[in-house]
Image (cartoon, rainbow, N blue to C red):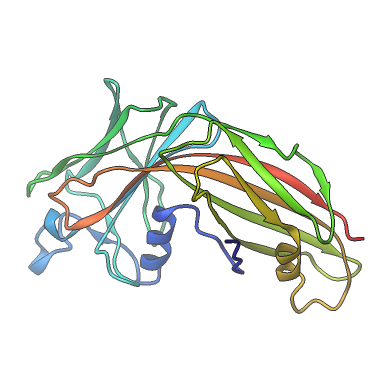
Length: 262
């Protein structure tokens, strides 16, 4: 089923966690943000971990530590606390992205499907969590439509890819940027459903995408650039020393459509 939303689509569960916690004020210290200035217990922390490749060559491992509450608190690592990522015997420290509100910790690797990327949370004052992990699905290619294919009102485009990705979870989404005869550009973004029958193809209707982008705009639309993303995801495991969290490995591909009105 195709659905749409406006504003910003959050790419993956880690981005969702960042949004939910970013409004809760600045991050707390992992080593002194607990009761009476003590270290925050690992058992009170949620880990949101994504391992993602968008090109079949490079991988970004990204972790966020927070309290798991809506509009809650993020934690910035200090006092000897650190995150380390490893795959196939290659290990790298995860660097703070220096966000004011929601620090993410990042490491980069080569793409290796079917192999666990393991993240360890190493601590000085309290026990850590050595084994959160997720693997990446196999690489895939979008077969149809051709990139920059022209579409118009009433079109339904079949998006297909190979291999199908099964048993990985498949999600489709879009981002559209539309121009008008007068006035500023407008944007729409949203989800396009999944691949429930695991056949490697889904139909995408163009009309709802364009309709949402031009909502509230009196001027006629002249053109839209629509990026359709297919994402394959595998769930991983969060170390049980954490209170909770998510770990996901994902591979994504994107194709662009050029909308011109009738």
